[in-house]
Amino acid sequence: MIGIDIVDLEDPSFKERNARSLDLIKSKEDVLIEHKYLFWILWSAKEAVFKCRREPLNFAPTKIPIAIKEDENGITFSSNELSGKVILTDQYMIAICGNMDEFDFHTFEKNNNNWSEGIRFMIIEFFRDHGQDYHIGSDDLNLPTIEPLNEIISISHHGRFGAVAYPKKLL
Image (cartoon, rainbow, N blue to C red; front, side):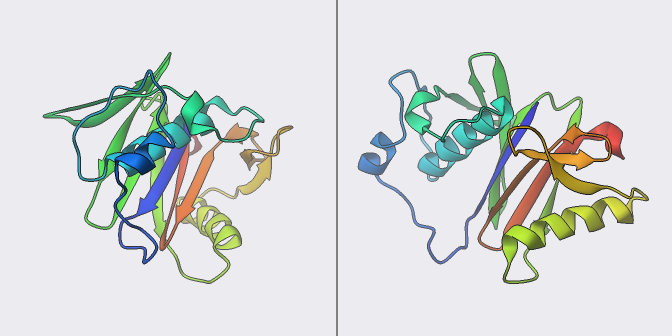
């Protein structure tokens, strides 16, 4: 399984959050670090874990315990048996959860106003550019898959950016 979340750090609605905001998404088991974007790191990690689990439930960040660690290799996180990493650029942040030996990801920049459909089109074009004729379907829980192979993928978009996490074997 794989989960991904992306945050556009330059989105006009993006803002730094305070400790009170953090309390709205924290669980008592969370292990946190000091960071300028702590709220968004925690939010993205929890969302990536939620997507990785592929549960048909509503996203409830306080029910997802996260332990965040930062060292010379960057920011990583874990939640029970799952683990992931956070990638920070000048423009966006990505949290990706799952077995990175089996999965990869790709980011996109928005090119039309219907982002939900646009990201799907861009994913299809990404695979076509790599010689693959796939389309996006959904599983029994209405979560995204690559068809006709019925392979699990994870999709995220925020502001100007989108991302897809997919099994490496698809390319």
